[in-house]
View 1 (tube, one colour):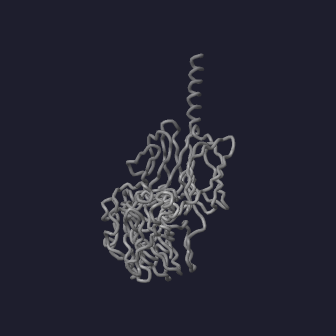
View 2 (cartoon, helix red, strand yellow; view 1 turned 45 degrees about the horizontal axis):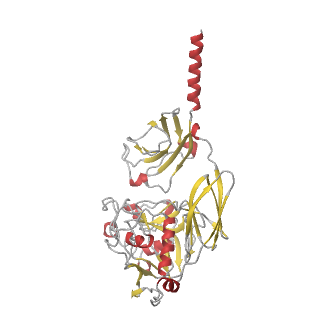
View 3 (cartoon, helix red, strand yellow; view 1 turned 135 degrees about the horizontal axis):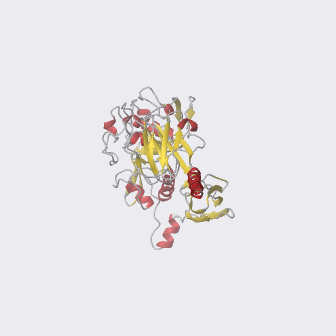
Length: 463
């Protein structure tokens, strides 16, 4: 009898332990800015592109069950599961937890769509202890400065930026055109909020620098752009590196999925009239690694080459680059608005109504998945568009200034995108993507701290 009772006790303990180790879904959602399903596709038995479910889990996953297209792709704490469109469930078996059946409809996804990427985040009950967080307040001067914490922009007002972060060490940087930037680290403690006071120091003028460093040398004149003709300028930066720019005359155009754009997506609609009232200059080429290195002192790109476009730069990285570039040149560069970008890509007032920037034959003007050999290429090595601008279709995608927002059918003058949001727009298609995504009207979006080996930038200079 004693042995029987002991056996029952041990069995009950084992069952209780197993029941205690339950796996739960923290979140399941469409990752609208993740292009994995399109750039690394896999076909189902009906020859349609699959959806990709990225399973995020800290632990050992043994197997997946359901309508999946094997093999799965495993990383340290992330597994990519390819599933046919219209799939509705996924079973997950792990080493330390009871099996879990995830029904997508329970999380607002009726069924998976082809070519879309989803993120499924799992936690075990032993992992669900709430992480302590604390408030960080940064008071800064001047009040127009930009504040980044952990490389993410923190929106401030009247010289005060506030955010809530996990307890522990975090990095920050405060920068502003015409001032010395300040950066450092701060350690947040659970016991009390943390406060920083940052007052930026104005940069020394060219005269002050000359007087301090070389008092016997005459003051150097401020560098002015060299005008090569009425529609093109070249602005020296440093070390013999210049920025070539093309003038875009103000005008009115129809933005969005106009009739020549084949197979447009809903987020390219509706078409709407846009008027740009001011001329502007836009980069003749995408920003190269040579230019980025001259300004930032380092090169983040995966594909290395001075005349290749820089990539693996986030929107926030671009803002830091532009701030430093403006300090060097004395000019006011910025990212293009989405409307400025599309107007220039279409050829401005010289537009011939092409589907891509400069041609209806994509191979003439773009490096894309059909001809790129899975890498970037030297800027300007394909044909230019009607305005003489290169690579606005293909090579690397290009950040725009705007927050992403849905289009409306009403007319707009000098639009700057949504007032706020979580994602920034990028345009143009790249070496990694098919022709459909290189059309001049195609738009996509991603969080401003993301960086990818297919995403770079092009500069704009206002008159």
